Image (cartoon, rainbow, N blue to C red):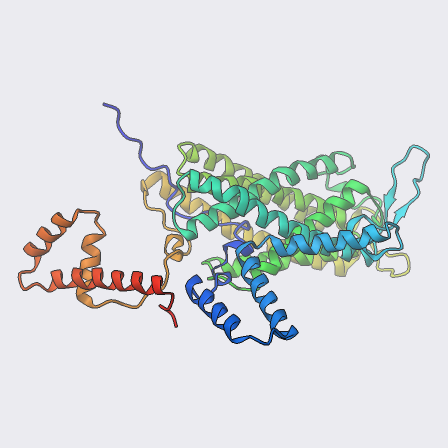
Length: 458
């Protein structure tokens, strides 16, 4: 007879920078009122509002829109996208403000007849980042709700919290499955290939870029802006590494903004790629962990090797180049007129931010290696999530009597009614446990009757 496979679960949630939530997986976006209560309030409001005033109709419209948008969190970003596209269609020229939001701005004629069009930088790039932040919000919510959630149900993912994490990690894996290779493609077309640190400073300042370089850089900025906005709203229960995650996002956004403004985009491209590739493997590792896949062990080992190579070896090389080649390759002066910003001040700021990012990555590496040690040596089977994911899906209920709690614990073992009655009779002859079970059953029946009447929360 074949021996059943042991659980392949790693025993803990893998830490990293892919843990930012989505709008659809936030607990606070679920209304505190049950559907029956909201329907009762709406019915009472409609009965009392006989005047049908414009103000009342407006309130009713926004209330219904709120209910719909909270249920389908991808709908509001989609409406905003359609509005911006409609504004552009009315006047599809560069004079239309919506043009800067949809397309790259500041094109320059090619330097040679066969050369590519180079794009400069300016304030209009903020519109591009803002619009694609909305686009990525839509794609994230739509893919998670309409594609990933049904797949999670099919795979047997149970619990609201576990399903939320599963959806987030699958979407993250999909995103970086595209942008990881995209970044390598962009690097391959430059002198930076393959992580050539000298080329990061040659030809400085890098004030213009090809279309694919600029698009990649700004789309990555949109992704991290969208992640940071949702994370900093603090609309869900903070996780154990919440402070580290917030610090990581702040440092990342600071590096993106400063590198783009002061022309250190070649350094930024290399840092982007090291994190994109490793983020794909951490997201897929988490996904396999939630699915309790049989290959999670060897795949997790592969992920650790890639993490160490990308986030530590390559980034330490970049840090070393900032300490050495930053000063020796190319001009080293501060001149606002010629936009020469490669100076002592920028060197200190760049090294400080990259060092802070490296410190957070080292902390996460320590936690990742601890998970690996426990998985190999301790044969951990229990999945102890960073914030008790399965418990997040439980609704808050009044604390039942002590006897009822005992009844709940016994009935939760899955035994039949007869087995439960027998066990309780043997456990306690004075009937207190049996009384607890009766209380539990009576409470559940009363809740069902209240829900049927639609006034359980009024």
